[in-house]
Image (cartoon, rainbow, N blue to C red):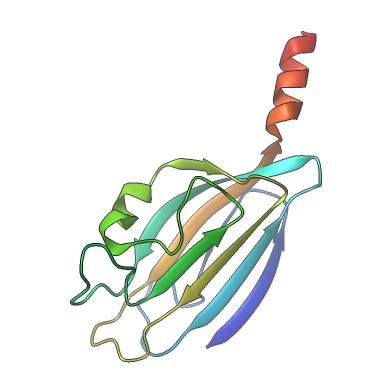
Length: 134
């Protein structure tokens, strides 16, 4: 499966098309999440099931997972730190996020991939401006 999807506005959850069922074989997916220009994207990683068979602690998983558009997350996401990201609130640095999943085509086990909840919110400078006026 190869895919690219552009997602706009609203509170939503995205994942690969087989979720919550695990999948096998090569997968390449990109999700571009856009908000209105004056807003940012708040997101939570709800699940991140990646192939980590025989991976040293300081290395990315066999399934490579990236999140671009926020300085809060270092890429690629390392296997040893991926569980620390689950349930944490993150925010984009601007009006977009680009998320990419490249799975290991030779994996011996099935994996679900990511499940991420997101919504657009007021940008930090908008929140301060609104707060300061009241």
